[in-house]
Image (cartoon, rainbow over all chains, first blue to last red; front, side):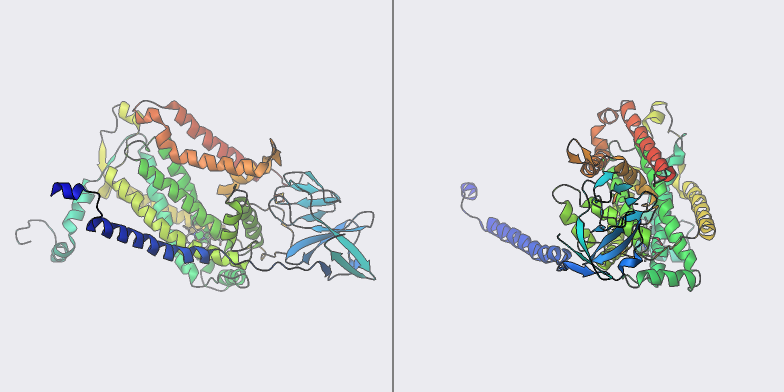
Amino acid sequence: MAEETLDRQPTRRGFVNWFLGTSAVAFLLSVFYPVGRYLIPPTVAESTAGTVRLPFKADDVKPNTGQIFKFGNRPAILVRTPAGELRAFSAVCTHLNCTVQYRPDLGHIWCACHNGHFDLNGQNIAGPPPRPLDPYAVNVRGKQIVVSKST
Amino acid sequence: MAGSAKPHGRLWTWLDERVGLAELEKVVKKKEVPVHRHTVWYYLGGMTLFLFMVQVATGILLLFYYRPSAEEAYESVQFLMAEVEFGWLIRSIHSWAANLMIFTLFIHLFSVLLLKAYRRPREVTWLSGIGLMGLAMGFGFTGYLLPWNELAYFATKVGTEITGVVPVIGPFLGRLLRGGDEVTGATLTRFYGIHVAVLPALTTLLLGLHLFLVQKHGMSVPPGAERAGGGRRTMPFFPNFLLRDLVGWLSALAMLAALAAYFPTELGQKADPFASAPVGIKPEWYFMFMFKTLKYLPSYILGIEGEIVGVVGFGVGGLFLLLIPFLDRRTARGEPSPLFTWIGIAIILYMVALTYLGYTEVATQ
Ligand code: HEM
Ligand code: FES
């Protein structure tokens, strides 16, 4: 009797345990897999706009000021330098994604979140931002300002 | 029962036979609170519990008017503040009590730390307490965004971006938290669900465990008081301690009412994803020491981005705090452990100093 139970033959109890265990795991997987996938947000197609016409005229942007505008679904900034030149950059700070602004008193671009500074070429010159702002190309056609991704 | 000589009424007896009130009474009567010169710290946990109940009550009231979408959230809070009778009061109490609750929670945590109440057999009580601290901060972080104003919008942008900095799983976590790549209406809906359903459920579970353990082990007598032969004196929990608790709770309620009346919570400007971050953007005060630390870190430390160093540093710090009962071997052996007292004091000083700097330094330069 005792020898028989010690035998490594598959027992009925062993089979039932294996069966219940596997079912339990399968059950949990079938619950948590859909829930897990459900929680991951679907990717929304990035706006592929490579070019935007700005909703304001070239004359409206005075020297030594900046304007935020929509570039696709991200903010960008148009700056007229004190010398009168128009430049555009992504307005998304390379530090932690705040939206930058133009500071007339400093004469360059500034991020309020952690005091990050960028010069008029978008270079990070002080504070925590690790990279320059992405530059965009600016074209003026008559009074229209057109900003596009690559130069 | 028939032979019971207890001075209880018929209703009590009726209920006792069905619910077992006598057992409950025995438990309550047995509970004693040690009396020594550190007894005052025993009130902080109860105070936090009271403030949490205030949050649940006012939070449920806010739900009747609040609308969780980017288009309507700001307007619904505006309506609540301007039109709904006592809407300003309910909202202001919810936001003041949130701050006070985190404040008393901090004091509770640090008093437990300095009095070494985490030592055997209360390690699990400590673990659940740190968990509750995390949940409370989660409440604060998700609740801050709900009015959908400018400050909250950018604070959340920075806050969720910081999770994105966590090595390996960070970007995934950030997306999961924001419900997309940016802070949008999807984030608001997600934070809302977390704030009013997920966190309350988790808190109820963890708080239940925490209170059960406190009840099971009784109050810990600090090793110092124990060695000095103190802690022999006790007072009954019911009614002596509970009545003192009540005095504290009533004072807290009075203070809440006064704060809400004289300093009602502001609403500010509606969030605009296409506006520059406003000057003076700041997180809730209890995140300030971390925010300020990140501000001070240079963009690169030994070739690693400053943020990563900071975030990993705070992660390691949190883990250290969690594991203190297992790291403090001297207290575990019943010896004095000045090292961990000093570590506790150092953490407090660091947090106070950076919070102070965060509020006094002008951010513009
Ligand atoms: C069951 C519990 C809770 C519910 C149902 C709830 C519900 C709400 C709702 C609907 C709002 C948005 C309305 C508003 O902005 O005033 C809100 C805001 C907020 N909640 Fe809660 N809440 C609960 C618990 C908590 C707890 C425990 C905390 C504490 C840490 C907390 C902290 C906040 C904060 C800081 C705000 C933003 C306050 C403001 O700016 O107006 N909540 N909550
Ligand atoms: S987000 Fe711009 S400096 Fe931190």
